[in-house]
Amino acid sequence: PPPPPPPRAAGGKLAFSSGALVPTTAQVTFAVPLSAAKAVKQLSGQVLHGKKMSVALDRNAADQCTVLVTNLSPATTQMEIMTRFAALAPVVSCAMRSVAGTAPAG
Image (cartoon, rainbow, N blue to C red):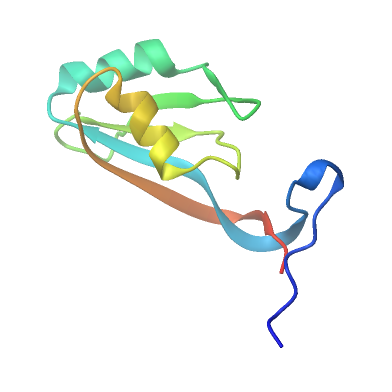
């Protein structure tokens, strides 16, 4: 028989369990540094899935075209990040990063 579906909490949302890896940060790269600076200024502090995003220039990127997006909800998808950031300027790449935390159970 197929495996049972993941447990659901009230309201149909997925129940979560600790210890798994979930995407809670993103790295977004623009074509030019001006676009990255614009993203920091305009998107830092915006709320996505009930959490205020923190957007800062990636100090490890030599070209200053890349921003780090932190304080993301586990419910945030790469497409949501791409869409939100691409509304400011063309995005060259977007990568979600996982850290130990909370992930869907099952």
